[in-house]
Image (cartoon, rainbow, N blue to C red; front, side):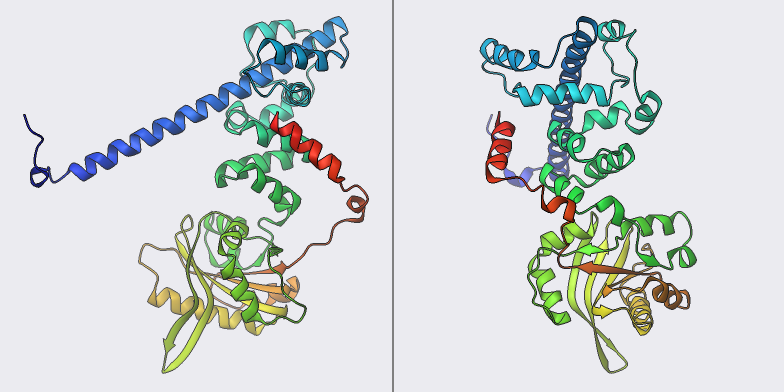
Length: 368
């Protein structure tokens, strides 16, 4: 029998094809997550075995280099068992010794061993959170984020935002956990809970635009042009959910022309976000102009199912007290944050920068 002519294709065929494709993609995603989870379990299990031997039989650290060599000889096709990575497995187990996916045999072997931070780690790091992150993320978090509360924040943020390891490192180095939710705002006064809390946590202070190269005394239009030229990095710094609508968005009101610096729509908050860029200090009159823009966007662009438009004023030196007083008297929900083009390196780190040889060694270890 010949194939059915294209003209006789059922009307709902496209929907069927789309449904199947989505199911295939979902299955592929589940398979990848399952593989990652098994790898994390395996590394935790290996770390548990080594820890038990060291505690019960007094093995020292010297056994790890030998173990790495023998595993390479016995299982040459398997990657990830370098000396450095095996040490990470041991550290990984010791960091999260009380995870609920403890294999029964290991649990019995370690029953007499003291478990540290059991209550704290169990509450902060449930097994599903640990299993969802790639191993490379865990390695960086153990190395660079010692505070457990901060580490949990980065874990959840990495999953929610889909951060790669490189992006995770950038966020750690820029102290993203300190900046999130810090903008001066009137959200608590103008939005109902929990919407006000959600919007507050969406904004940062300060924003870091270190991907720009602007000379001292730059103009606001240069800043705006630079951000759009590096839109992908700008969106990354803004955070997940921001969709770019337009630059110098034109508003024709009462035979007068007005232009919004940057207009976004936030897919999670379901609202428009107006961003105004200001060089120098925050001034109280900025709040009135932003409230005007938000009102016009609400009237002309906002859909009936959208949430109220939010304003974000970005200044180089936002005086927080001044901003809070200015925002208290406006009806629109507005936040005020600073921005930095460069961030000075702390003196404690200036003398501890890695050499070229150390960097090359690190890259070599990651490749093993």
